[in-house]
Image (tube, rainbow, N blue to C red; front, side, top):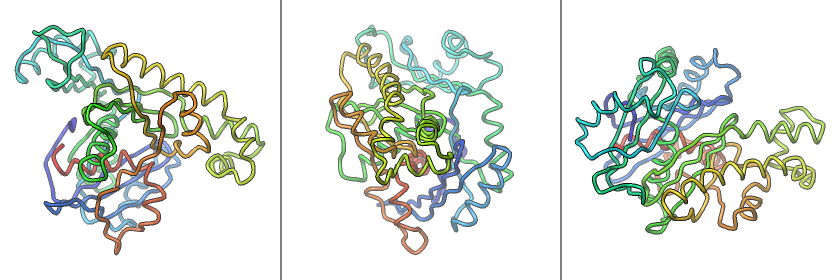
Length: 348
Protein backbone atom coordinates (compact mmCIF):
# COMPACT_ATOMS: atom_id res chain seq x y z
CA UNK A 1 0.00 0.00 0.00
CA UNK A 2 1.49 3.31 -1.10
CA UNK A 3 -0.21 5.90 1.06
CA UNK A 4 -0.40 8.73 -1.49
CA UNK A 5 0.34 7.90 -5.14
CA UNK A 6 0.74 10.42 -7.96
CA UNK A 7 1.80 8.37 -11.00
CA UNK A 8 4.09 5.58 -12.15
CA UNK A 9 7.35 5.64 -14.08
CA UNK A 10 9.93 3.22 -15.48
CA UNK A 11 12.61 4.38 -13.02
CA UNK A 12 11.89 5.34 -9.45
CA UNK A 13 14.06 6.61 -6.61
CA UNK A 14 13.36 5.39 -3.10
CA UNK A 15 14.41 8.25 -0.83
CA UNK A 16 14.76 7.72 2.92
CA UNK A 17 15.30 11.05 4.69
CA UNK A 18 16.33 9.99 8.18
CA UNK A 19 17.34 12.07 11.16
CA UNK A 20 21.06 11.55 10.55
CA UNK A 21 21.40 10.52 6.89
CA UNK A 22 19.81 10.68 3.45
CA UNK A 23 19.70 7.35 1.63
CA UNK A 24 18.60 6.96 -1.99
CA UNK A 25 18.19 3.86 -4.18
CA UNK A 26 16.97 3.82 -7.79
CA UNK A 27 15.19 0.80 -9.28
CA UNK A 28 14.57 0.34 -12.98
CA UNK A 29 11.76 -1.98 -14.05
CA UNK A 30 12.74 -4.09 -17.07
CA UNK A 31 9.48 -6.03 -17.03
CA UNK A 32 10.90 -9.45 -16.23
CA UNK A 33 13.30 -8.12 -13.59
CA UNK A 34 14.15 -5.19 -11.34
CA UNK A 35 17.59 -3.63 -11.35
CA UNK A 36 19.41 -1.34 -8.93
CA UNK A 37 20.63 1.38 -11.29
CA UNK A 38 21.81 4.05 -8.82
CA UNK A 39 22.58 4.39 -5.12
CA UNK A 40 23.99 7.03 -2.81
CA UNK A 41 23.81 8.24 0.77
CA UNK A 42 25.02 11.30 2.65
CA UNK A 43 25.08 12.37 6.31
CA UNK A 44 22.43 14.87 7.34
CA UNK A 45 23.65 17.30 9.97
CA UNK A 46 20.49 19.39 10.28
CA UNK A 47 16.89 19.41 9.13
CA UNK A 48 17.41 22.85 7.59
CA UNK A 49 20.06 21.41 5.24
CA UNK A 50 17.85 18.53 4.06
CA UNK A 51 16.94 19.92 0.61
CA UNK A 52 20.57 20.73 -0.24
CA UNK A 53 21.82 17.35 0.98
CA UNK A 54 19.10 15.50 -0.96
CA UNK A 55 19.99 17.43 -4.13
CA UNK A 56 23.70 16.65 -3.73
CA UNK A 57 22.93 13.00 -3.01
CA UNK A 58 20.96 12.60 -6.24
CA UNK A 59 23.41 14.54 -8.43
CA UNK A 60 26.53 12.82 -7.06
CA UNK A 61 24.88 9.40 -7.38
CA UNK A 62 24.20 9.87 -11.12
CA UNK A 63 20.52 8.97 -10.83
CA UNK A 64 18.57 8.60 -14.09
CA UNK A 65 15.25 10.05 -12.96
CA UNK A 66 13.95 12.73 -10.66
CA UNK A 67 10.77 10.78 -9.84
CA UNK A 68 10.84 9.82 -6.20
CA UNK A 69 8.97 7.81 -3.58
CA UNK A 70 9.60 8.84 0.00
CA UNK A 71 8.08 8.12 3.39
CA UNK A 72 7.10 9.73 6.66
CA UNK A 73 7.32 8.44 10.21
CA UNK A 74 7.48 9.54 13.81
CA UNK A 75 4.94 11.02 16.17
CA UNK A 76 3.04 12.78 13.37
CA UNK A 77 2.07 9.39 11.89
CA UNK A 78 -0.52 6.97 13.29
CA UNK A 79 -1.10 3.45 11.95
CA UNK A 80 -3.99 1.40 13.32
CA UNK A 81 -5.44 -2.01 12.49
CA UNK A 82 -9.12 -1.89 13.46
CA UNK A 83 -12.24 -4.04 13.12
CA UNK A 84 -15.17 -2.51 11.23
CA UNK A 85 -18.40 -3.78 9.72
CA UNK A 86 -17.98 -5.17 6.20
CA UNK A 87 -18.52 -2.60 3.46
CA UNK A 88 -17.17 -1.53 0.09
CA UNK A 89 -13.97 0.51 -0.20
CA UNK A 90 -16.04 3.53 -1.25
CA UNK A 91 -18.29 3.18 1.80
CA UNK A 92 -15.22 2.69 3.99
CA UNK A 93 -13.65 5.96 2.86
CA UNK A 94 -16.79 7.80 3.96
CA UNK A 95 -17.15 5.83 7.19
CA UNK A 96 -13.61 6.52 8.43
CA UNK A 97 -14.33 10.24 8.45
CA UNK A 98 -16.80 9.53 11.27
CA UNK A 99 -14.96 6.66 12.96
CA UNK A 100 -11.37 7.95 12.87
CA UNK A 101 -11.61 10.11 15.99
CA UNK A 102 -11.89 6.89 18.03
CA UNK A 103 -8.39 5.88 16.97
CA UNK A 104 -6.53 9.08 16.03
CA UNK A 105 -5.09 11.34 18.77
CA UNK A 106 -5.09 14.43 16.52
CA UNK A 107 -7.70 16.89 15.31
CA UNK A 108 -9.03 15.32 12.11
CA UNK A 109 -8.81 18.69 10.36
CA UNK A 110 -5.02 18.55 10.88
CA UNK A 111 -4.44 15.16 9.24
CA UNK A 112 -4.72 13.32 5.97
CA UNK A 113 -6.55 10.01 6.36
CA UNK A 114 -6.13 6.85 4.31
CA UNK A 115 -7.78 3.47 4.76
CA UNK A 116 -7.65 0.05 3.15
CA UNK A 117 -9.63 -3.16 3.58
CA UNK A 118 -7.52 -6.14 4.69
CA UNK A 119 -9.94 -8.92 3.87
CA UNK A 120 -7.30 -11.65 4.09
CA UNK A 121 -6.56 -10.86 7.74
CA UNK A 122 -8.73 -12.32 10.50
CA UNK A 123 -8.34 -12.49 14.25
CA UNK A 124 -10.31 -14.41 16.90
CA UNK A 125 -12.07 -11.25 18.12
CA UNK A 126 -13.79 -10.63 14.77
CA UNK A 127 -17.34 -11.64 13.94
CA UNK A 128 -18.44 -12.89 10.52
CA UNK A 129 -19.85 -9.44 9.78
CA UNK A 130 -16.57 -7.65 10.42
CA UNK A 131 -13.43 -6.97 8.41
CA UNK A 132 -9.94 -5.79 9.31
CA UNK A 133 -9.14 -2.23 8.21
CA UNK A 134 -5.80 -0.47 7.98
CA UNK A 135 -6.26 3.14 9.07
CA UNK A 136 -3.49 5.70 8.60
CA UNK A 137 -3.41 9.33 9.67
CA UNK A 138 -0.53 11.68 8.87
CA UNK A 139 -0.33 15.27 10.03
CA UNK A 140 -0.66 17.60 7.05
CA UNK A 141 2.36 19.59 8.15
CA UNK A 142 4.48 16.41 8.11
CA UNK A 143 3.53 15.73 4.49
CA UNK A 144 3.94 19.37 3.47
CA UNK A 145 7.43 19.55 5.01
CA UNK A 146 8.48 16.42 3.10
CA UNK A 147 7.09 17.64 -0.22
CA UNK A 148 8.75 21.03 0.30
CA UNK A 149 12.15 19.33 0.72
CA UNK A 150 11.63 17.31 -2.47
CA UNK A 151 10.53 20.33 -4.51
CA UNK A 152 13.48 22.43 -3.31
CA UNK A 153 15.81 19.55 -4.21
CA UNK A 154 14.42 19.51 -7.76
CA UNK A 155 12.62 16.17 -7.40
CA UNK A 156 9.16 15.03 -8.50
CA UNK A 157 7.22 13.35 -5.66
CA UNK A 158 5.35 10.31 -6.96
CA UNK A 159 4.49 8.49 -3.74
CA UNK A 160 4.38 9.59 -0.10
CA UNK A 161 4.46 6.40 1.97
CA UNK A 162 4.92 5.40 5.60
CA UNK A 163 8.13 3.77 6.86
CA UNK A 164 6.28 0.71 8.16
CA UNK A 165 4.77 0.01 4.74
CA UNK A 166 8.10 0.53 2.97
CA UNK A 167 9.74 -1.90 5.41
CA UNK A 168 7.18 -4.64 4.79
CA UNK A 169 7.23 -3.96 1.04
CA UNK A 170 10.99 -4.45 0.91
CA UNK A 171 10.56 -7.77 2.70
CA UNK A 172 7.80 -8.81 0.30
CA UNK A 173 9.95 -8.03 -2.74
CA UNK A 174 12.83 -9.95 -1.15
CA UNK A 175 10.48 -12.92 -0.84
CA UNK A 176 9.32 -12.64 -4.45
CA UNK A 177 12.70 -12.00 -6.12
CA UNK A 178 15.33 -13.46 -3.81
CA UNK A 179 15.95 -16.79 -2.09
CA UNK A 180 12.83 -17.52 -0.08
CA UNK A 181 13.23 -16.40 3.55
CA UNK A 182 9.86 -17.16 5.10
CA UNK A 183 7.88 -20.39 4.99
CA UNK A 184 4.14 -20.34 4.41
CA UNK A 185 2.20 -19.16 7.49
CA UNK A 186 5.46 -18.09 9.14
CA UNK A 187 5.24 -14.95 11.29
CA UNK A 188 8.21 -12.60 11.07
CA UNK A 189 9.07 -9.49 13.07
CA UNK A 190 10.93 -6.85 11.05
CA UNK A 191 12.88 -4.55 13.38
CA UNK A 192 14.36 -1.50 11.66
CA UNK A 193 16.70 0.47 13.94
CA UNK A 194 17.33 4.07 12.94
CA UNK A 195 19.24 6.78 14.76
CA UNK A 196 16.36 8.08 16.88
CA UNK A 197 13.58 5.53 16.51
CA UNK A 198 12.94 1.85 15.89
CA UNK A 199 10.10 0.45 13.82
CA UNK A 200 8.78 -3.05 14.45
CA UNK A 201 6.48 -4.51 11.82
CA UNK A 202 5.01 -8.00 12.07
CA UNK A 203 4.17 -9.77 8.82
CA UNK A 204 2.57 -13.08 7.93
CA UNK A 205 2.51 -14.44 4.38
CA UNK A 206 4.02 -11.11 3.27
CA UNK A 207 1.05 -9.16 4.70
CA UNK A 208 1.61 -6.46 7.31
CA UNK A 209 -0.41 -7.24 10.44
CA UNK A 210 1.05 -4.97 13.11
CA UNK A 211 3.29 -1.91 13.26
CA UNK A 212 4.65 0.24 16.07
CA UNK A 213 7.48 2.69 16.67
CA UNK A 214 9.50 3.03 19.84
CA UNK A 215 12.32 5.35 20.77
CA UNK A 216 15.28 3.26 21.85
CA UNK A 217 17.57 3.35 18.82
CA UNK A 218 21.07 3.71 17.41
CA UNK A 219 21.98 7.01 19.05
CA UNK A 220 21.21 5.56 22.48
CA UNK A 221 23.70 2.74 21.87
CA UNK A 222 26.30 5.25 20.65
CA UNK A 223 25.80 7.46 23.72
CA UNK A 224 26.20 4.47 26.05
CA UNK A 225 29.43 3.38 24.38
CA UNK A 226 30.81 6.94 24.38
CA UNK A 227 30.09 7.36 28.07
CA UNK A 228 31.48 3.99 29.15
CA UNK A 229 34.60 4.09 26.98
CA UNK A 230 35.13 7.85 27.49
CA UNK A 231 35.32 8.79 23.81
CA UNK A 232 33.54 11.25 21.54
CA UNK A 233 30.39 10.26 19.64
CA UNK A 234 32.16 9.85 16.30
CA UNK A 235 34.62 7.37 17.78
CA UNK A 236 31.83 5.56 19.62
CA UNK A 237 29.81 5.24 16.40
CA UNK A 238 32.67 3.29 14.82
CA UNK A 239 33.59 1.26 17.92
CA UNK A 240 30.02 0.05 18.62
CA UNK A 241 30.04 -1.81 15.30
CA UNK A 242 33.73 -2.82 15.25
CA UNK A 243 35.10 -2.97 18.82
CA UNK A 244 38.58 -4.07 17.67
CA UNK A 245 39.60 -5.68 20.95
CA UNK A 246 37.16 -3.81 23.18
CA UNK A 247 34.27 -6.24 22.74
CA UNK A 248 33.70 -6.84 26.45
CA UNK A 249 33.60 -3.11 27.20
CA UNK A 250 31.06 -2.51 24.43
CA UNK A 251 28.91 -5.41 25.64
CA UNK A 252 28.94 -4.05 29.20
CA UNK A 253 28.14 -0.52 27.98
CA UNK A 254 24.98 -1.55 26.13
CA UNK A 255 23.79 -4.54 28.22
CA UNK A 256 20.98 -2.70 30.02
CA UNK A 257 19.94 -0.88 26.86
CA UNK A 258 19.66 -4.17 24.96
CA UNK A 259 17.44 -5.52 27.74
CA UNK A 260 15.23 -2.43 27.49
CA UNK A 261 15.25 -2.74 23.68
CA UNK A 262 14.21 -6.39 23.92
CA UNK A 263 11.40 -5.46 26.32
CA UNK A 264 9.97 -3.12 23.67
CA UNK A 265 10.02 -5.96 21.13
CA UNK A 266 8.37 -8.19 23.75
CA UNK A 267 5.56 -5.66 24.20
CA UNK A 268 4.81 -5.73 20.50
CA UNK A 269 5.13 -9.48 20.00
CA UNK A 270 3.08 -10.23 23.13
CA UNK A 271 0.29 -7.95 21.90
CA UNK A 272 0.34 -9.60 18.47
CA UNK A 273 0.47 -13.12 19.89
CA UNK A 274 -2.44 -12.50 22.29
CA UNK A 275 -4.56 -10.91 19.56
CA UNK A 276 -3.92 -13.44 16.79
CA UNK A 277 -3.15 -16.48 18.96
CA UNK A 278 0.04 -17.28 17.04
CA UNK A 279 3.72 -16.76 17.83
CA UNK A 280 6.39 -14.71 16.09
CA UNK A 281 8.78 -17.24 14.55
CA UNK A 282 11.79 -15.17 13.54
CA UNK A 283 13.21 -11.66 13.87
CA UNK A 284 14.91 -9.76 11.05
CA UNK A 285 17.05 -6.72 11.87
CA UNK A 286 17.79 -3.76 9.61
CA UNK A 287 18.80 -0.10 9.86
CA UNK A 288 22.11 1.45 10.80
CA UNK A 289 21.62 0.59 14.47
CA UNK A 290 21.35 -3.12 13.66
CA UNK A 291 25.12 -3.34 13.23
CA UNK A 292 25.72 -2.88 16.97
CA UNK A 293 28.28 -5.50 17.99
CA UNK A 294 26.61 -8.59 19.48
CA UNK A 295 23.04 -7.30 19.11
CA UNK A 296 21.66 -10.20 17.07
CA UNK A 297 23.31 -12.78 19.31
CA UNK A 298 22.03 -11.08 22.49
CA UNK A 299 18.48 -10.96 21.13
CA UNK A 300 18.69 -14.63 20.09
CA UNK A 301 19.57 -15.55 23.68
CA UNK A 302 16.75 -13.41 25.09
CA UNK A 303 14.03 -14.60 22.70
CA UNK A 304 15.20 -18.13 22.01
CA UNK A 305 14.59 -17.74 18.28
CA UNK A 306 16.61 -16.87 15.20
CA UNK A 307 17.62 -13.20 14.80
CA UNK A 308 19.47 -12.04 11.69
CA UNK A 309 20.28 -9.07 9.46
CA UNK A 310 18.93 -9.17 5.92
CA UNK A 311 19.83 -7.78 2.51
CA UNK A 312 16.93 -6.18 0.57
CA UNK A 313 18.85 -6.39 -2.73
CA UNK A 314 19.31 -10.14 -2.90
CA UNK A 315 17.71 -11.29 -6.15
CA UNK A 316 18.06 -7.92 -7.91
CA UNK A 317 20.31 -7.11 -10.86
CA UNK A 318 22.81 -4.33 -10.15
CA UNK A 319 24.19 -1.89 -12.73
CA UNK A 320 27.86 -2.25 -11.84
CA UNK A 321 28.82 0.59 -14.22
CA UNK A 322 26.99 3.09 -11.99
CA UNK A 323 26.67 1.44 -8.58
CA UNK A 324 29.45 0.78 -6.09
CA UNK A 325 28.53 -2.82 -5.34
CA UNK A 326 30.84 -3.09 -2.33
CA UNK A 327 29.25 -0.02 -0.71
CA UNK A 328 25.75 -1.26 -1.59
CA UNK A 329 26.42 -4.65 0.04
CA UNK A 330 28.12 -3.12 3.07
CA UNK A 331 25.24 -0.71 3.70
CA UNK A 332 22.39 -2.99 2.60
CA UNK A 333 20.72 -3.37 6.05
CA UNK A 334 20.41 0.40 6.47
CA UNK A 335 18.90 0.78 2.98
CA UNK A 336 15.81 -1.35 3.60
CA UNK A 337 13.36 1.58 3.75
CA UNK A 338 14.79 3.15 0.58
CA UNK A 339 14.60 -0.22 -1.20
CA UNK A 340 10.99 -0.75 -0.15
CA UNK A 341 10.12 2.71 -1.48
CA UNK A 342 11.87 2.18 -4.82
CA UNK A 343 10.05 -1.15 -5.20
CA UNK A 344 6.77 0.81 -5.42
CA UNK A 345 7.62 1.08 -9.12
CA UNK A 346 5.91 -2.32 -9.35
CA UNK A 347 2.69 -0.72 -8.12
CA UNK A 348 2.62 -2.32 -4.65
